[in-house]
Amino acid sequence: MKAQERHHLKQNEFAIQAAKVAESFSQNRSRITVMVVAAVVIATAVGGYFWWAKRTNDAASALLGQAMATAQAQIAPAPTLPGATQAAGTYPTEQERDQAALKAFQSVAAAYPSTASGLAAQYHVATTLMSLGRLPEAEQTFRDVTSRGTSIYASMAKMGQVSALVGQSKYDDAIKLLTDMSADRDGALPIDGVLIELARTYVKAGKTQEARAAFKRVVDEFPQSTYAGDARQQLSQME
Image (tube, rainbow, N blue to C red):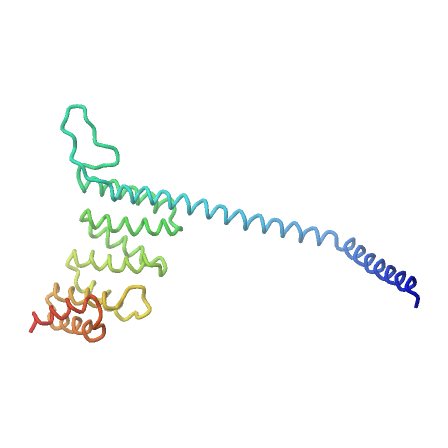
């Protein structure tokens, strides 16, 4: 077959395929249009969501930073000179600073509850309530944080809840919580740290035998732990 004829044949084949595509498009124009529009809508929605999520997270993070700055603000005695005012960014007492920080953290937690910054703020609400001596409220707030997934804040909140329980002399509740945590080998908190806290709680509860067993577990199971020295000392004092 001559080259010219082969070229002509290829052109005909291409024309036939192009015609088929055009006919198919014409017959399915409505369906194709709907699919294209749907794809555009989905892409726009996804892009809009990620833009909104980033903007929300940025705003929450900025607000949390302001609350943290309040919690770490300098304590400065109230001025005694006539007409003088408290220096900006300072507080006359720790209690007044904690009160201001509590409101700031509560604002973040309320405005952005579904963000990581909102969860962190809720945790700091609980720790600030502890500082203010509002133990029952702190206990409940720590419990709320622990119920929100498996983040590091949720794990830390369990230890905070223990402190709140011990502060209220609810030793049995604290011991139960610590015992459950000590059995969780996959948890975020180190088991040796949980065990030493369990042993100390047993001591406060007047349960010497149980305290000795918990201290011994630290020494036997975690001999290189930073808590092992304290555990050995406690055991020697119990002999």
